Image (cartoon, rainbow, N blue to C red; front, side, top):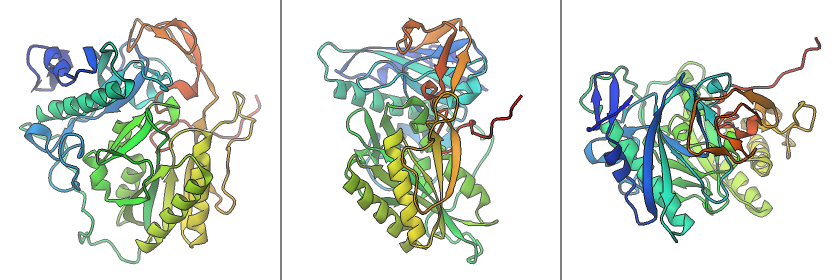
Amino acid sequence: MALGRETKLDGVTLVVDPAEAAGAFADPALAAVRVGWASPGEPVRLVKILDAVEPRTKGPGGGGIFPGFLGPALPQGTGTTTVVAGVAVVVAGHLPRAQEAVADMAGPAAELSPLGSTHNLVVEFTPAAGAPWEAVDAALRRGALALAARLAETALDAEPEAVATHPGAGDDDGADPSLPRVGAVTNLQTQGAFKDVFVYGSSFAGSMPYLLDANELDDGAVVSGQFGHPSLKNPTWVHQNHPVAAALRARHGTDLAFAGVIVCPEPVDQAGKALVSAAAARVAAAAGWHGAVVTKEGGGNADADMALKMDELEALGLSAVGLFAEMAGADGTGPSLVVPPERATAMASTGNYDQRLSLPAMERALGGDTLALVGRPAVDAVELPAAVLFASLSPLGWGRLTCGESVPV
């Protein structure tokens, strides 16, 4: 990676013009934007991370990618999508309700966040005086998506290192019809401004469950605007690379038939949770599913969404497996789930939110000068809970942490 006078792919080096990158964020709500690189293995700490986006495009101008933001909100998931893998556009800084998210590029914590293994173009910003925070948030989101699409355009004429072909909804892919149909039920955090997720450019709050072809996720149909619970958030980068969908795709035609992704809001009231959960199970049953992997976003409140959906699926005769992050105290002995299912029993742990981790000192930081959580310089050696590490307990399945029996020494 390099900063230069022209944004281009120069052999195996992605060069970015800082002025052009900042221009993607031109908006009255932003007074200034600064960009910098952080690559794997460098002694760099990223702090105050808001979102990360993988560069993708469907052609010059970004048409078709990130529908509802860069182009019309029309169904995507067909045609060719160019991906610059191993790169992320990362937005970092202060927004209301945002809980500080951290990622190290080196040291023991680097492998615990997806950003520890990507080359990151980090965008820092200064809000315009008097600008509403909601306008600042919207400007950052549009800018990050536009910049990600622009970076991907540099690879349109390059020889691809790999090509993946995914059948679309309704395509005859030759899969054995006797295989069990298994899909993903993906809960999206919908708790208002700064804790919201967008589907086809609109907040998913107040929506009913919706069946997506996984190819639509590839094209950016789901975009994050959720900045709480850093370890439990599913940034746009993770939605683009939906780990459960990827795992089911890999097994398609072997021991299962991948049946798609049902996205669901996470209402804030019990009646809403019950309605959405029952509706999601009915959508899965109507689509002929035999089983589902259920995921969440957010803390204990989201456990209820998970538990209700798993129980509703089981009540209709569908097998349900839930990915839960535990909140079991620093020593792991506390109650793991705020709301466990009553009927379903198959659950996988993505790790313990409260586990303490020691992070070594770094030489520089991007995103801010201080770790607000502990009131220390961002480059200091610190001890932090796993809760703070960006996407480290990903309930969408990315993470590398798990839980097991402790072994007496």
